[in-house]
Length: 598
Image 1: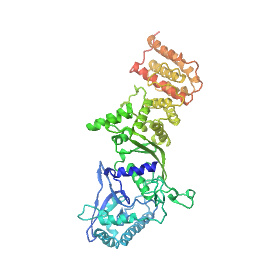
Image 2: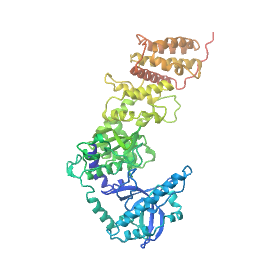
Image 3: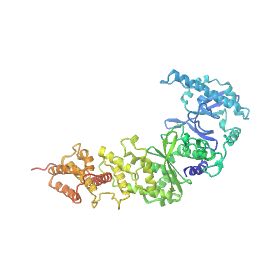
Image 4: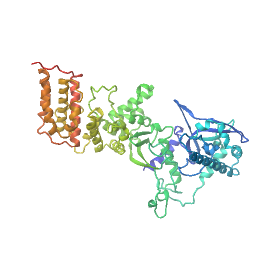
């Protein structure tokens, strides 16, 4: 289903110039410089064609003949484009940490690269009747690589690709009509003598692709030279003597189409509208036809909505889509999208030279927004007070923000958790236990129960298979669950300590939260004895208020549990958070109470 959907997507993207989709036999490459030639083959100059982007200069994306070279392919020149070593025999300056032996090895390889590029193009001179190509051949015959020292720009563009151009022309050499026609004839002819077989993507008989090209770029953590979604590289994968990808035949045309379409989403000019990162997983999504929702979905899922900086039309679209998150997918009609429009979401994780699909979701836009609404409804808890945060708690917290609460640093987030969380959101199923377990560990480590962690635990509890009824957004005084009530009681005892003694640095939360939430029967008797001491330092009115709160909570606890499991610890944390916010609602800024006089 994944390959079939991407194969169909190719036609839609190819019709939209903003995606820069390459036709068969071509690929989109990042071009940094142009070698400009006179018609007689003399060098006119080398132009830097990079584009300004902020304070950086980035290469220009351009369609060129052929595909990028796989790593370890030896001397393998491209046709009419390549890096400066192949095009000009340019050897970059010796690096500070480069030995003489390594530099000499690099120099010899550069020499062979230029010789290979020159030989390849001169061998084709008799086949191609084009004045521009003849100029290139004259240039290659007489060019001395030592002249590269005259162009300091080449040192700066050492890792960039270049193309050729005749002086006075706006098109590039590979864009000449005769060269395009010649290249098309070469790509139309089968490059291998393989018998046709049934394509698993299209269902038609065609020549199968040995390797699926072009390589896929844009997946975080994968090889920068590109990775494959489908590949076979071990003898164990061979079947009846069919090696590489021939034992799962996909036609060359279908392989090119699905790889090119996926590259358009992952690394093309419009990739920022189709790609987000969730942990170590790169998520791409698309709709069957162009939609307004598709243009905004990446911003919604990554939390990058800034309505104030948008024009009137964009503000109205944002409001409508936010309303769809609150009310469901039916609201998408307001922006002109059909809620029944199919949508596909694919999660890809890096795995050496191959990509591993973490999840694959198909459905409709309306169903997707219904699932997102249910997800955010499950997360909803009372906003946090008294935390000193400069930014309000987000109404629709992005997925990366939830994952961030599971580890001390981003690099420590479990690589499997992002995919599991996405599947739960998209399918409306229970959240992974590993999510709650990771949050509980973080709470036990830093004793912080903030809005985001409380929201995660509430959502996890709400979708547990045996959960009956709803879970309150704010304080639920009728909830008789012992763990929830013990969490409330802990918040009251902490507040009493603050009211009696003020800020004491390491309070009972810092010293006792971890043990109280795991083994309450051992810890709470001690806390209640200390609590009586705190009551003795308050005024009579404050003492009565705290005693009433504590007794209301304790009266609903039949017995003090000796041990709380993961689910009970989550209810403990939620009870603590709810009670703490209720106390702040009652007194926005708790003040220390003067010591009672005898």
